[in-house]
Image (spheres, rainbow, N blue to C red):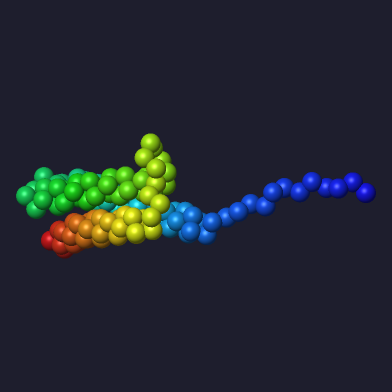
Length: 125
């Protein structure tokens, strides 16, 4: 009976699998926040609120939130081996990047929520 060749077993590092899953969750969250931010900025423009003093301030806040989101994209790229810079290997480095990601996403959510409150108040008037 001929001997069958078997493929070498695939080794999966759980830490890398967890990191990949975590990055996927953050990318999905980032997509939702970007869409929400764009929608809020569009509402400021279409309602004409962007051209008022309060609306201009809200627009600047949304642009600041967008800058935060661009930083989040940069951090996610660092973690996922994209570009010339190798991804950090030490768990403490990875954790500090995720902490910064959470902070930036929270700041963005706060700025976007303030704009939504403004738009809600303007609808009542």
